Image (cartoon, one colour):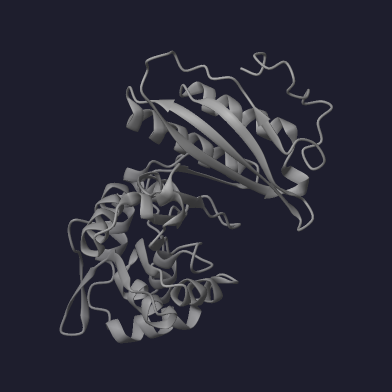
Length: 318
């Protein structure tokens, strides 16, 4: 795709920290075809922002019929990070499916390269964000919310669960129901108090939320973890909204049942839509921050998605 200009540097010789402030390509969109422009922003530590990483980004864009119009260097590594902005034109034919697939591919690519890649529609709303929605596990807090509560209750993972090299999301749903059932009869206040004593916030999370609130943003957490912990985090951080899985309680004790519909990938997206209607804003005015398969639909649905990555075991999915 770079042969049109004949001037894009060879990956073997190109040092992205020192060359090119802006690279333009000629349009490949056929005359008369309707299209829309999106902005893709990449930020990565200097050591991982190789030319091969940028080539991989371009390949993902090309796979989903994107035409790169400009590449602009936003920073050259003086702060330890290199960042680029891609202006990409996508044909309107099958736009939403192609865009969602592209976004998923770019998020996975960013994780592998220890960087962040965000995609949003170009235009005035690009600068007019109104709400930031966070995942809970390994995003606002430094561990898995479900694990914190279940371990505090003495409920370990079931050994009957299938062992897969790459667990399916349905495995997690079945496992959650099994673990919730083993909470039956336990005192809610005792379990929650112990869980909250084990909870630690991700470095910088408190400061980020304070800054967003000061700037006038509405903030929310949407989690597959327990609503009990999500509510506690909401209170501590001063968030506006909190959603999570509700473990039913009767007489101050757990019943062992999970309220339906349970929060899964689709439900996270639905809850985001509910927030949009409540606040009378559009998806383009929302920033979503999270990680893992359960967050993927929520991230894909937001105007700006930030894939947040912490060191953790592979079982955690947000």
